[in-house]
Image (cartoon, rainbow, N blue to C red; front, side, top):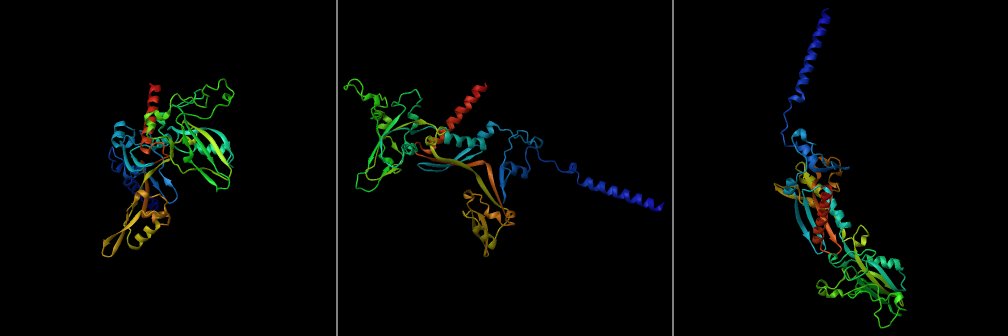
Length: 393
């Protein structure tokens, strides 16, 4: 009997101890989170893409407005907040290249600008090639394709689109001619894009049916119907229309070979064919963020600097013969992860991307300056938004 009583007493004490332990770790005793503010680790997940040694994490965006409602945080997109936070900062502007930062913007909008720049901004490009003579080794189709890819330096906003039923005229067509011949006994001849000569009065090739036409005194019909010369327009009087680059190789002719043709350029968009795309490329990347999680000094600092192929890190002298690693150029980081690939280094260096800060680069083919291309892309996106609002209202 005594043994049973002692056993019950021990069980009672054990249960009491468990209850006390449970009470100590109860969630009800934890401090309340401040309303209207996310904990640091959740805020980091919401605003950063974390790049580990194997793969990035937190790549998705949390778009649900009530995702953090329990913490008193409104995650909905507000126009006033977007207007106050959104910024565009020009980093580099050259003749045909523009680099700028878009800050406080969603990835879907950044990608919309990229797609519009590539596929929906119009340019002028050679569409129809009338070949009078081609004795080179290049087939007619390949020659026409090469001519179509030559960028033409002219503002497409000055021209109209041409439909299937339209007649080529001074408002929708630009005509070039090319005539190159390699005489016998001479070296091989390189035919460059500079050989394309603008014909402001339109086509000079007579329609085949006109050779046997009525009166010889009547003006023969050509492949275009220009009512006036294009060089009389003030936009072209001082700046003749020509290829952007004059040293593009169109073909190479051997002795005795000849090319004679006429090329007609019309207005189009990149989603129809790549030759109408106004950009060589338009791309963006998230701003890299490189953080040292602890002080890295002396030999470790030198090892870290050697790891990075683009020289993100540098060494500073902190006195008394000691050296310390610093993050000198985080913007040039390509996130190759060489600095954290070795075991244990991911505890020293953290690689992240800011998910609402985009480094945007536009490389123009030359039809329009890159800064004009971006403003035109903004106008197209604005028109799309207005069209959607009108259809929904």
